[in-house]
Length: 272
View 1 (tube, helix red, strand yellow):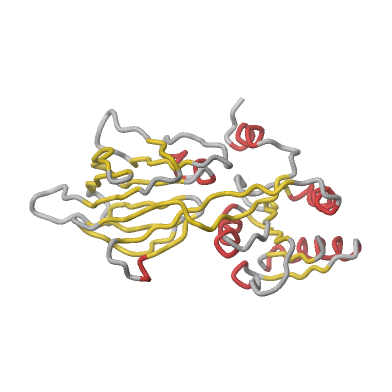
View 2 (view 1 turned 120 degrees about the vertical axis):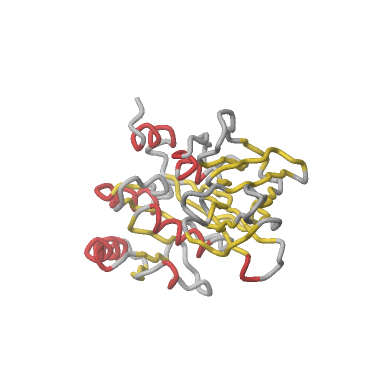
């Protein structure tokens, strides 16, 4: 590896300068950018180092999906499931990378689009897609199909479709299962379902999931927002459908092997 980009917000500039200086002392090229959206895609870049939390890594993953440029996340946030290194160990991590002591883990993403076929009604998601009610205090009805077969009908606050990477995010809070990041599977999880027996369903990553908005009350139509990784994209209503499937583009994360996924899971989630 010769060419590095360090993504860092202004409040972490001192740490970014330290990383840049450390790499340059090893004869490498390094530059600092204030946002992953500024990372040039028409130039040769060997590694993008993200100083921040999971949100910063998510932004970089979306920017670099399909580009084959690996990402090293350095945790400056709270939880840091997507980050590989804690701040005090960054120099050792850089030494390991420059000495070739690392692996690149390829991870899947999602695409979501509506049946309107409008270009603005398409999005990429790294963690999850949520189809959720518009109004607080009302529920929505959603029929879930997998490869055109009806799975179930949920009367709930929302339906969440997660990648393995996103299984430790909102999916976990909604009592969904945790999947190892490298798995090829999708998780369908109802959020606050008005039922005693609705549970998550895990399906093949090759499946196409269709979420059809139903009608909870006879006198009003249901409305739902389509949310990709925490950002609302558009609104759908009764009779409309959302299609979610594995994206063609993947994103690459650097793995150093010092801490396993299960070690991280126990540490981050206070498990014994």
